[in-house]
Length: 565
Image 1 (tube, one colour):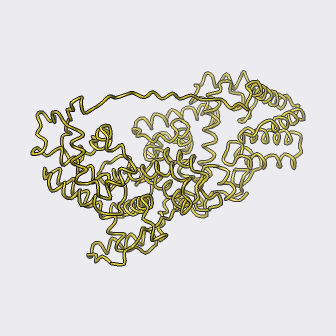
Image 2 (tube, helix red, strand yellow; image 1 turned 90 degrees about the vertical axis):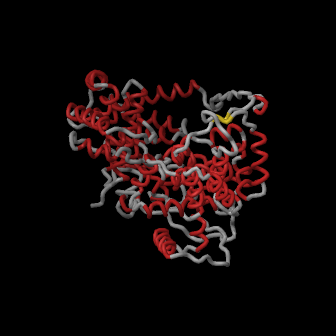
Image 3 (cartoon, helix red, strand yellow; image 1 turned 135 degrees about the horizontal axis):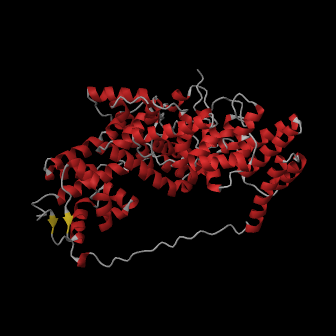
């Protein structure tokens, strides 16, 4: 099976992992760059493997002006900060988040200015919100920045917008200023009606509960036939079940056990046919790996003979940087402006901080706070939200916009957001693209890698087992974990590995359910030394799902992170 077909089967992949984005229109007038800026331009061109214009460099340096405005606020130079912010808001064709943070600086500089808003105990008494907005509009309503913000995030101009978006705790922590409290007269508030969201889930009318229960019962009967040596009956019943379901996971299960039955009947050619069908039905599923083991493929999978999804080592593939190509120079859309800003600024951040791998970049964005990172992440979040709503309305550049927004989320560690985006916009992606390799790392990230390496110095366990467990336990919730907690998990797993003589399936069962239940299932329920059978006969459905999920993850980690050396 080709790698292209394999990737397409995931049903959530993107067209271009190593993306390309459009450079927004370039003026015929060139900007004279000083020597440090020329050096930066050369470094960016090398990293992005494309030619940049002086206007491109000027575009991303608007952040420096926003940063300066906040520096002035931290120095209590509020009038100066206000003037800088106004100038930014009157510049055309900037990115959404540059306008947004310029407006933040503009608003905060006014509210902190004692000459305009005297405070007692940091409280602005009888704050007239409507009058405050009228004054702002008189200065800014004609500015490009104001118009972009009104069009794309109008809530920012509401009272809730001020509290939740403008006057945020993170920005006041960075500028080391006390957040002002707005004491608003009720006359300026109006009535606040709480809106209750009535969310309900409807079952598929085409699915009859009775038929589901019957399929589940027949599945157990088919396995029972297999266990009792009635292989032909097992094959017949599983084939009937195939005609009742379109679910790829269930069909892959049926093909695998039909193959096992033919193997037991010594009909190897027929068995192999069904193993291949199992893998092709659901690549990267559990039965793809189990079928590959029966086939003894070098890849360990039935869906492909390739030992890895990559032409080169995964370390090289993972750390490829985004490529930036000139497209549609006359397109000044806010989305393309946002893409250009996010990619150029993120690349500049990587260069200036001497970051050579994607994991280090993700770690910095996860753990450290700075104005630059706040703006970059804000731009990516806005791009994601906007593109989810607009991708169906866009024809031009749809593929590479989708690719790049997904990649940007991955680059800064927004795993869940990237996956949800792909799930929603997968119809806009090119299923034949070969340039989607980073999605393997997105769906199978090596969580807590540093902690795992340290823990393995005390209790050696295959790290891929722990990555598989973490993925199943906290799907993409990449929160911090202490070295002590990681070591405790690893050493606990090591105890189970030793107890069950390195049998991974039994170990995962004991990790989840405890040794007492695992021993019962091993010795009393199914007296057979067969891991797939053991997993199928775990009586607790949640534990069965966990064990099978971890094993699927484990096999996929082994394949994705295969070391050619």
